Length: 483
Figure (cartoon, rainbow, N blue to C red):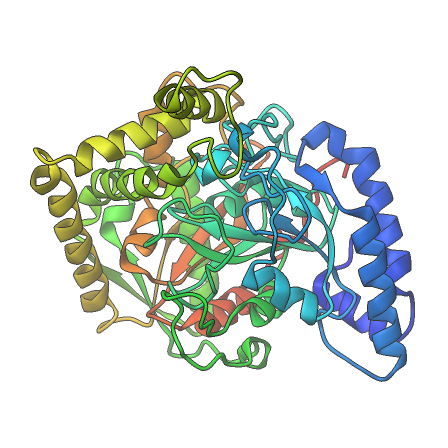
């Protein structure tokens, strides 16, 4: 059962080959057996899962249908879940139980999805390795000595290890796509505003976006269908009709114009990954796509701009965690100032403190124009580059990451080296574009991914290309040894 995709589970439940309760029990047992190796879950919700599974079986018995009805999933631990710990991977929120469900959680529950638990993540989604979590590092099931990527590493590791078929995740600078590449999954960051951010604990409000992590593009289409849609509770949600993502999966790629930016193939890219990207291009050419070299000239400025904007927004968003209203509070504070200082100093980890300090500095009176304002101007140039490119091509293709997954601890002493691993993913967040990573091969036994980018609200086009690619390749079917 654990090898089934979401689509296969939906067919099996519809054909009464098994019940949601039976499947849920199998997966809960598998998590209990195997997750100690991975550390991919922060909280398990056995009672909730079994009650939701029984309710889904009853709804099916009454004639109800739906691709997610009875399907087991997990949520990244920054989606608020009523009455369940929502920690954001931080000591600061270790004791926080959300009083309400995030819109994404509520929508998927209404569709009948079964929540198995909350997955591990970099603290407050700040990281590219899932090593900054208060609950310990997550291990990559393809090699337990390597990172699974971040910040959605728990969701990625759990799905890759076949502990469950799919999971929710979030992407601020590549936190869905990079873990997908490192663990041989398909991961989709939707257009900014496509998925509600209400109840999703914020890191950087103008960059964060929720999306699906699964083994196939077909499964991502199913999960995104349940997540997407306008939400009046979210001022950044866009009132745009949600298409049937599954309906367009089998469209022909004949004549599809694919742009390959020349800037992607610089000295920083592992040549073995470049080879995998070129192989993917050839495969898509066989399916009728037309390849064209393009240019994204301002890409080189994206990382410095991102690492001003994101920490600036984080310093503002995380100011609410002060030890007064909720979350961690230091013991025996001498006065209010001592309460603030020690609660935040003890409750936040090193990476979170680093980004808060950088952000506060960039927003300070003497440096706002020099750093934050300039970074926002670069953001506009990055967006303009994409708009010009999409006048010539339908999608953009390139590597998801410059290197395969690195060893645990290898970059802990050099945060900038870790930041540079986001070079290909952060531009989509700066511009608000949809992006998808799909499996494209292996380097030294570790998975690598190819990234696709599309114009606004063209998630269906990305899923279509990835699905057609997966019909003609088998990278996405490979399973890590031991799982």
